[in-house]
Image (tube, rainbow, N blue to C red; front, side):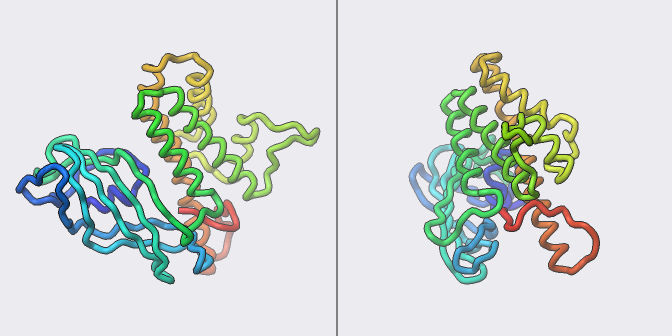
Length: 268
């Protein structure tokens, strides 16, 4: 695996072994180096093209060594359709040795500057990514309950957006809001937004987040639950995004039969 694949999976923080990209000669703190690690690709709704496009970097990236086991990477991105620009920043940590043959790395922080070139559409990618970033910041500051609040907000937001995309109302016939369990079950029955691996435990995940927030778990317990809960929430978000991509591909190919359609637009 090349380092670019780890960056492309942002905001996923999973550990992964990558090919050596710094060489074997150690670089001093605060020193920069150009590295060839593959292209970084981020999919966004391009305002100039009026459609979802891949924003792509060059093969060579600039990294700044910030510690024995950490480095910062700034990436310039360009729309594949119209060459509009955006930027991304990654803080990468390492579990063993940055200069080993196969360093084990993971993403510590991630942010994007889309300027006036790219926007969110469909699942409000920018909003969701911002909430993931806020959750990670809270976790890094040992604020377990705060981190879980952001994860619950993401779950609620993507469920509501998926419901709206297929015309499912968040309110009952008497005008009162549906409880989250009812809305989630209705949306999942229609669009299968919960990954198959834990399809029977979608509301259990929400309950887990809620119990922490309501004070039924101490900060240490919340911090211990954060990473697995984050992975499951990320799984829901990616599942929705993938289904939209599949639906658009099926439509483009003109295949007959029902397609898993979640919204008029798409997000990646």
